[in-house]
Length: 282
Image (tube, rainbow, N blue to C red; front, side, top):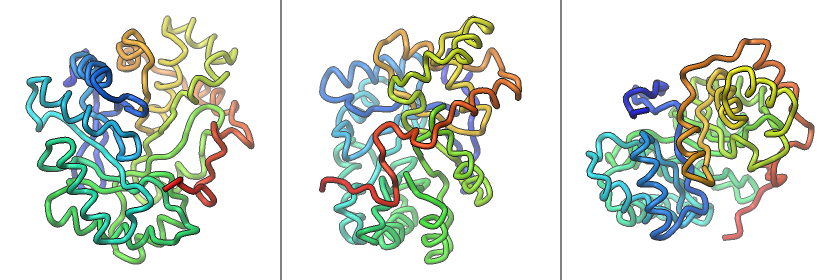
């Protein structure tokens, strides 16, 4: 599959993103560069990193070494909690660009709202300013709940283009998905496969994999896309990298999507990271 074969989602600011991205959590150093280069050769163009992942350097190096024009890529990184004050946030955006050797970012997200610190509105004003300066094309958030979204929108009049959230079959986030859609915000999914959770072994997923001659990961990623979600999977092997991007030659029925939805659990988060209480270490 080539990058041109991957459909796109249109954002509320007029920009677009491919319907699947590459996660780079724990993808670091020269080995990380090799993994990202392999993904690029397979057709991945949306690459998701974060200052907290320590993979920004590997992402930038892989893009430069790929020989593919910068304009073909969609690069996302995220703001750590210790830099939520406006001036700090603007400097960190510049620092991320320097680390990656890029002139602009395609998408920049506030990584966590950290409501106990209550500085995320100020952080959002910095992202709005960075977008005006041309440092960032699209701005968004990660792990924001409806009340967090409404506060930043009310304060600035600017609606995030993206909200990246934990979503997988054990934590389907149906209400939050609707909240995002109601505000015109694209939902991205981190840990879209549940970090190797037992969801991959659930009978309904295995049955569908057999029916469509796909692997279980492809079934779950297709389930995300049919819900209007952009999944950001990380792959442990080159084979998984290759398979994760082959999702547009089959389609689940609506009943099959609903059947996977039924796997959701009241305490389905992988690490109990509740955005209303979660705190970063720094």
